[in-house]
Length: 316
Ligand code: GDD
Image (cartoon, rainbow, N blue to C red):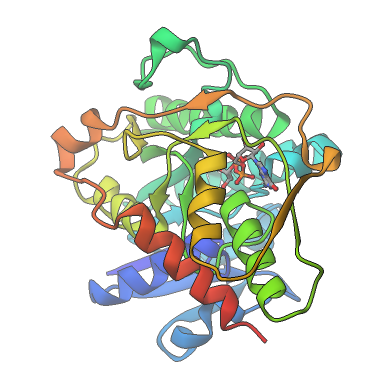
């Protein structure tokens, strides 16, 4: 069985590739010229990479036609919420064009393949307290251009399922963490700063944004297992939450990480890390996905944070 992973060089993409190899799936991934391959260094010999610009319909068509994958995991995207305010149009264009180009290629060449679209809890955006934990049926009130791009991806997936019969399953993953995550994201930013402070590479002042936000964290290795199960057992045309069901204030993530370090560290809020809008609380109900697949997260938060900190401590 052949799987194509877009965004294979990214955080979740690299963990997904490792998981697929363990399922004895042939793994192919898209890369762009100049993509950093650090995250897939350990599996470079076991996977095949194709240069492909997802925004370019010709490039995507050529790849899909030649490869004819059985499974497509579409993870490639501009994934940073703050970056989507600096570059709203680019975020929307990038995230939507990639998906349309993939679905068009699958449709045009009549592929009998299953496609997972990595969407996001950010789609829910502004949530009322009585709505938590959030079910898939909750109204969507996106708060950022990134969130709108993900809502659009879901809608496009639904449309291609209904009007073209494509087997598309959308996953709304809540926050995920673990080794190799970019320091653009909160837990990884904190862990990297702690590791650098421990090495004496920066002054002992850790910069943070909004510590009052509450998020639902799952280990990335549990999340990629969910992506696989979404295509194994998920119903085409459906959307599934991937969440732990527990939410923690960002302040608690910071405290857990700081407690793992012997360094004396001062915490300072950096106004530049505050967002124009930030969902107060995002906690998900993934019972719909559990009923369909039996998926439950297995890796405790403390383990994910330890592995993340160890990852940054091991960086040169
Ligand atoms: N990045 C960052 N850096 N966020 C901070 C910081 C900081 O120093 N301090 C506090 N935060 C808060 C943010 O304001 C937000 O409320 C929360 O921490 C999580 O921020 P991120 O880790 O940047 O993630 P995100 O929730 O914006 O988006 C991530 O999760 C989504 C849901 O899975 C990304 O991975 C998205 O691509 C993904 O869709």
